[in-house]
Length: 309
Image: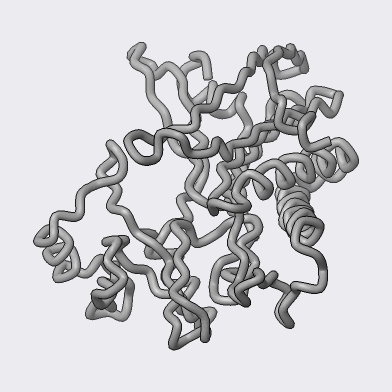
């Protein structure tokens, strides 16, 4: 089932209704990435497509993380998501945002079941995460970005992590424009650090300098009005030590860090603040709950002067 779930392939569909028609073509491609010492790393990506009938299609992209279990997490998550959507078409069409949340919970639970099958249920700690033979928490999780085309023209996007979903099209002047539909759940998000603070989470949002011996450099500080803002002293410090950018968008490498003094375990790090799996981090601020957005493609086409989306 998991192998089927990640074999997205490609296809097309055509939906017609009173408001017009939607022609859809889709395909998938994945690349392991990495270079130098990472050139031989494992591809932990997974994709799926669920053709639910009635003009409803669902696509998903999952990017696993964790050297031992990232691939298990992304494949198990993709399989569970596909199974949920194929079995709950009515829920997706009637209450799409609630259905997305239920689907992500099913995927999170599916990853937990896959990890228990690998390590054995006897390795579970009191709080539900798994412990390895060394007595330390077992890592492994995945981002997930899911897009559903409901009844042919309503686009619903849900995600955890930092795998982007973009809506692109032609602007009235003929240029190509796009906007991001997904939400970045990373340690550089003020909304996420506020959520962690409200939950009294033990995790800290810090720059990923790769130097465990040094005091972590916090990404944010409290502003004069109590709001969270990027700490200029921290930015000056990471510039001083030569911490570069990890993407062409000039994103700094950051991580959500758990210190031994807070957990009783060696230092733990996670590059996203929301994910499926990562059961130990779910006890300390991470969450499987997705951000969900929806829009009607006919409304978007109308705003854009009828251009292609």
